[in-house]
Length: 324
Ligand SMILES: [Fe+2]
Image (cartoon, rainbow, N blue to C red):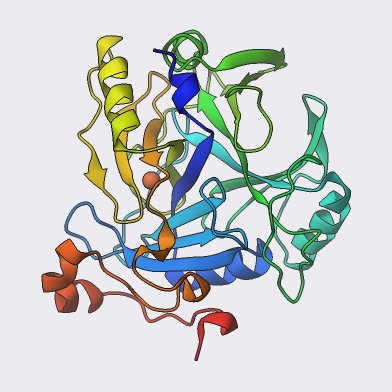
């Protein structure tokens, strides 16, 4: 089996951030993404929001999800073994706009930089999570439009992710020999891999930082938690789980019900947590497609704990398009 035949690209990217309101304001106003779901973290016993954002079509492969951990008082340590940059694609012509837009909102950024012949800007969300906008002229997915960000300039979906590693060799082998991704180049301390032929949703980079101390793998304000790749359905995920376990990486979880997709998770030799999520359920399973994100929704298996789960949550104001 070659997993690269099953993995259609990235499915979503997930990080832990500061306060929920700060996150909603940053992601919807500065990043200009569409808020598509308000729910809660399904793991553990702490009551924490799980907020979902996406492009205009709320597509698999455009989804950015956050756990605002500030209220629970849990903080992370940034470092190696983590996702350093969560990348989103924008049209290359819009990068000067993004530079200006980030400056206007006083978001510290790298300005337009170039790597592997591609222009991009790196910046951080208010909690310190690394984010990038990558110029990609071939990504024609529909961006969400805001008062400040036109459809042409907006984020079209996930581009890829940059993973920080202290050593390259074993993660390189994992990406190429276990997952079947294609190594396409090295530029300085960066190594680039394509899922299938690459392009939007299909780029992984390793950033070799041999002297960077290890960061935390927990949830916690300011650190990414995992990246998720897309499979078609449970059948494919089950085959993928058996295959990965057969290579010796036997710590692949059972299939978990995430309400909007089903997922398996496995820790990689670089330290990053990889998820493989199905593409066959979607976000309109519990609210109308044109009203995605309009109210706090719990999965059926949490309904009996509704009061207990909702009470500790921060009060939030959602974007204007989700208000009555
Ligand atoms: Fe996930």
